[in-house]
Length: 434
Image 1: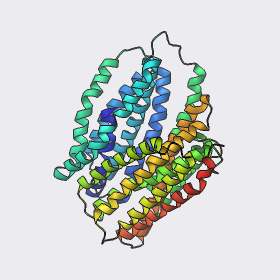
Image 2 (image 1 turned 180 degrees about the vertical axis):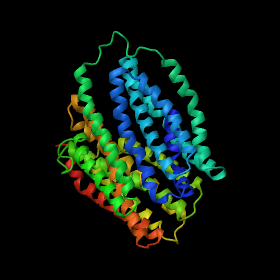
Image 3 (image 1 turned 30 degrees about the vertical axis):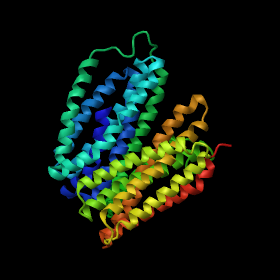
Image 4 (image 1 turned 90 degrees about the horizontal axis):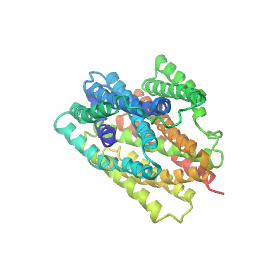
């Protein structure tokens, strides 16, 4: 899990540089978004596989795939190969994360599961602090390819160890009750729905990179798949912000969409328009990780007596301030660190908003439906990231296609993010516990 987190966080600051070198800046939204789309599919696939055959098989397959996809990305000769590598990386990451959680449930007694899960969460702390700036230094001093190759080498040994240790093992133990066939059949529709949603997201991300008839057809096809299948993964009433869990799930998607789009476009702005060094981008990611953790601690300790929906409003307003800072950072007179600071401010907003929404989602769900609520929140997060990034990408490419300057296009894309921030502020009251 430590190396999975390191790989997931370290490569992100290098992607804008890689897109520029591969002459594929227009397709950068596809590269950034396909990881999220694939992780949704990987999570469903890994969970289905773990329930059917034990967690050891998808865990081993995910680790091997993680090494292979890093090599695919490192050897990219085109933006399409890099996008394929990122898609496979998302698939592997989703399988590994779900398989590890399933393995803890299958192999550890009740008294040790909480400790094991806490250890898995702690494995992301150091990667969030050292991964992005270290990757930025390597990319600046050597090459972005060296980051991918280095991570592949680091991941190879534990991947081989997982395969060797789990080879031929019966898991869960023979004494554990086997999954009922009906349960296996009930998961097949979820797998097909997740596949359709992932495909729709990928088609949409490619379609917004241009405005000719072919791209519009891809957008239309992606929208059809998302409109038909995405609601099946969410609680009824999500799109109309029904009170309680539906509104909570919707706001998780809106907030995540704003944050992820800033996280994708601010580094791209810094590389392509401001010529900022990769190490600055890495430091921005590290600062965002620290800010998110600090804000999350503050809302759980210092603000625990405040109504949770009030903290959601505060988080949405901080996100709006981050959007304004990012838009101001597009001005030529502004130094590069102004735009970079938008990521840190946005992380403060998400550190307040995301945990508050999670608490609200659990409060709105009975004990036997909290797993469903957690899954719906994760799905909404992925869908929100894909949707908001796609809309902002379409606006950016439309401005550039109309002859606008890069800074004008980025300012317009950032300005669009104010809409979901405002919507989250207005709808926060519908998440309150009555």
